[in-house]
Length: 303
Image: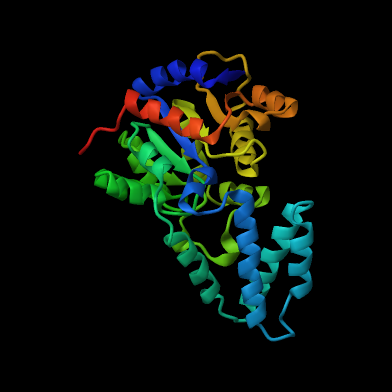
């Protein structure tokens, strides 16, 4: 189903006020902080790989793959990223240190400062905040806004026991579904569907945790594009696991906020199939206003 913002707001206010709404934040919320959206991060990844390549002896260089990646990333993204990550693994297997590249990426992420989106999200009484972003801008915003207790409730997908305890005890959690930049290596970034499926395969406990969140909460996706592969991976996996159909009225729903010109007939069909309601807006500033209205409805209590 497709909603205007005016139509969706009272629905989500009700779910939020009942303590049954979580938010899934994508790369779009960090753009105002100077970080790239998903496709822009791929460009940055290629740039870092190029720096690594320049540091290698000629026998270890993979210039041809980098040049091909620059040309064909838009046509065949999965093959491009898979090839680059494969070459990085080969380089590391040869005993070559890639720490300087990882330091460059860390510096890039840690130089960013939280924007309005991060501050609004942590200040709203969502049950959980889930994100595929590697940055720590939500945590920075929590500290800035006085929600210091949230800093001890931030978890990566690898911290399954601590995350399980938080959810069992009913405590709010910030969940980094792809990990945190401080702990990610150059060949470990989650950039394709295969990468995401590998996380779920090798971390079945985390998959169970994520499904438990979606089983007990409606979830609003903000900062995702309509064709964002991370959004598609998450929703497809969820529906495959739970096998819900679109007619279950008393089941949790997913909502994705999309710019109206990004909504296509195919997008609408897939959304209906996967129990995802679309909330449309004309300008990106309206998404921020919408999230701010939810904050006003149910602000997070100060400790």
